[in-house]
Amino acid sequence: MPLVAPAQRKPYTVEEVLKHNTAASLWVIMNRKVYDVTAFHKKHPGGAGVLLQMGGKDATAAAAAAHKSILPANLMWEFCIGYIVRVKPDETKKKEEPVAKPEKEKAKKKKGDSVHGHKHNQAQRKSPPSFIEDVERMLSRPVMATSKSSQDLPSGQNSKSSIPANPEPAVDEGEKTDGEGKLERTFTTIMEEMESEVVPLNDDDPYPRERFSTPSAGIGLLCFLQGNVCWSRGEESLKVGQVVN
Ligand code: HEM
Image 1 (cartoon, rainbow, N blue to C red):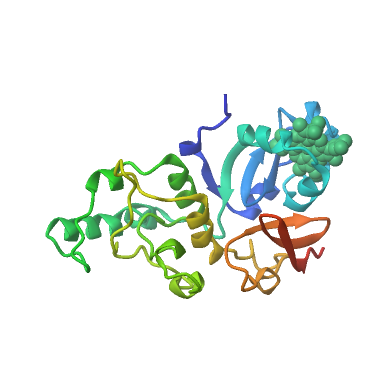
Image 2: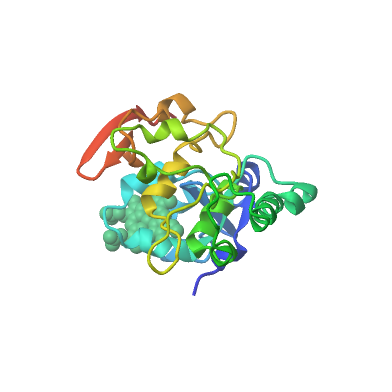
């Protein structure tokens, strides 16, 4: 059983996490998610010490370098209690976003306001797959109604050009659906949307934005590999930067 159900995961700032750096309350950050390893650290196969050492800090690179099997990654979600935000959304913002805007768009659609005259399937909007909700929480903005994905573009066209730097919860331009009427959203399309969201955790973030700049390689996965930041696409892995301390 997970300690905290995905829907109950909370936003934390780096400063808040930093306070949990003892055996009595031990949290670590990995890939912008917050893990409570208080109960686990004494049972950690890699030793309690490594987790205590990383207490309250970003252990993304250390964990990626240490873990050679997929077992840790499969266990980690059990300890995930939240995700990193730079600034905690205040109460007013919480009420208005991210629900308010898409609701307005939905209302428009009901009146037949769609830009391309596509009829939108309301049922899809009401029950997005839970992993999309996870991504939305992580990004603190809706991703359900962003601009077209590369799958909608003619081949050869760079998908990045269709993604604004700070995409607004946009007017839906008629997503593709599969035969069963479900949204065709794949890991790839979500990675595309997240690509523009790779930002430093805070002002003295050790991994400045330019080090993450995506080569024209297109879709891939940003990962840490032996001290290097790599842009991985299937078999290929391109070094795009270095982890600095
Ligand atoms: C919730 C967080 C974590 C979980 C669930 C976890 C889980 C595990 C597991 C299951 C192993 C055994 C791996 C295997 O048998 O293949 C392991 C090994 C290890 N872990 Fe973690 N780990 C976590 C966080 C970390 C972090 C943050 C670090 C680094 C600071 C770390 C460093 C290590 C090391 C050094 C080993 C030993 C690797 C070896 O002997 O080859 N772990 N961890």
